Length: 397
Ligand code: FEO
Image (cartoon, rainbow, N blue to C red):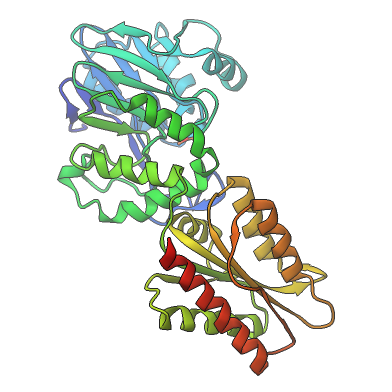
């Protein structure tokens, strides 16, 4: 009923695609869908690596059953307990009651907490190994990428890394599974958006994981979301490396709120002057229109950020406040920051953006511009100067 998808010798893809949900984690839009990847290793012993979201249990179990052809599963390796991967464990155990679960101490705590499972669990430590026959699995603890129990599993025989959410991306798998068989162009931006929304806070743990795995030869990366990587491994690692070091490319994101167009006019002047000064990558977002996940994606991508906001009830415009809260949550580092705003009778927006950037410790570029009601010649010139200062700073870097 299912054609087996071979990832590597004895290793099969048994994941599923979700093109139904609108919001991943009930927060982040997934217009291109998402895949929940699981892998089956059939050797003298059989090991399943992770499961899938409970909504797709039926398809998943049928795939597994077809490949097993009457055999049972010896081990279920759990790299990550978030329910998009652990959601089918209870059902799986009903079909394969003798299955031995492999995880770490924190995995065991979560298994008991989520699913009341506390038997047949083998706790493993960093670099511990189990043999399946030809294949030997070694476990690398990679805590906080992006939950405390996260670990990765490495098959020594095929040099395959089962990386959990690490190196994952939004975007379902539309036919092909392995990068060399498909056009992967659509995944690069979605990988950054996935990182920015899900993993973004944990740059330092991602760096630690990359350092730990650097000496390990890897021919295949099997993440829990998105394509299996073989041809583009160095590109994928480079994306995660740059993002987790908060390195930004030359470019500026201008994110603004505007109720009646006066703050927006300032954004337009700044953007026009940035372009005049030779900045090629200028990305403008009206925060009321674009979902914040796309704005965060580009803030992770580019070095410069300019935020503008009207004053609203003596505070920032609510959606600008929401954006800076999410930047704070992710502890995004090393950005060049400019800001501007407007008010009618008492200014608060610029003051609050100044407090935000002081707290972030980013470099403030140019003087903030604060406009009363609508644009004047003087405020026009101040916007131009802010843009010039940002362009100069970007060229220095
Ligand atoms: Fe894909 Fe953190 O779960």
